[in-house]
Image (cartoon, rainbow, N blue to C red; front, top):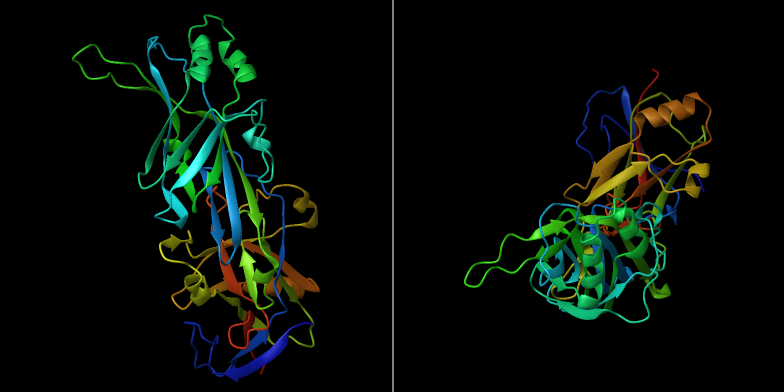
Length: 382
C-alpha cells in the first residue's frame, strides 16, 4: 500500500494546522500513510544520566523490571576515615513510573566481576553473588540511604589505608560494586547519577555534632531492564513507542509520482496523534507515567542498526494540545523527489534516552479519524 489521497483543496493551506493561505495558487493534499511499524534496535543502558530500579506492571505497556548497577569510586582525598566510620550508599529519587504510594522491596547484591557501563546492554544479566548483602525498602521519602555491612566496608577500608601507588587500579580489580534488585513493589524509581554517591560518616567527638561526611561518586553505573508485553496488549491501530530504542517507530513514505500532487512542494508535514485518552484511562489510582510529550526523529542507515544509535536527532517535535505531533519534511520530500528516490524512511522514539523509561502510545493506520497522514501544500504550475 502506498499513499492514499484523502482530500485536496485550494485556498486552505495545511489541513488542521496554523498555516492558512487564501492564495488560489496553493493547493493542500492530505494523504494517508501506510501502517507505521516498530523495530527493536540495539539498546545500551550504561552510564546514563539516571539510574532506575523497581518493578511495575503497566496495564498498557506490560511489566517493566529494572535493576540498577553502581560501583562507588575509591576515596582518594586526604581526609582521615576513622575506624568506626559508617558507610552508606545514597540515592536521591527524582521521578517515579508506577504507583506513587507503593512500597518497594529490594535486595542489594555484590557484583562478582569487573564490568563496564560503556558497553552494558539493557538485557545484560548482572553477575551477582549467591546471596544478597541486605534487604531494604523505599516508600515516600525521596532520599534513600543504604547502610553497607562491615563485610563490604572493611574490604573497602583496606584500599583507603593502602599506601600503594596503584591502589585505585587494585580496587577496581577487586571490588565491583552492587546490583539493586527489585523483589516486590509497584513502581520503577529513577535517581540522577549526580545525586548518587558513597557517603562515609566519621562519628563526632562526645557531645559534638558529627563532622561533614566524606563523599565519593560512582565509577560505573548501568541499568538492566526486563520488559514483558502480553499478547493481548498488541493492537493493529495503536503503536507502542519507547525512548530507549527497544521499540522504535519506522516511518515509511513511498514516493510514487502518480500519487503525489503536481507542482512545487512548498510545505510537507507528517501529522501523528498520541492516544491521550487510553494513556489516561489505563492508569490505576495513584499511578503515573513519565512523559514529556516529545518525539525525536532520526535518520538511521541499515548498517547503523548493528550498533547503538549515537546520532543526534534531526528534529525534536513537541506535542500540541490536541495530542498532535507535526513533523516537517519539506526539504526531505523535495530532495527525495529530485533525486528520484522511491521512498523516505525515518525513525522516531518517544523521548531522550537518558535512563528514564518514557513510553507513548501513538495512533496508527486503521483508525478512521486520526491515522497518520502526510499533508502536502503545493504551488500550482498554472
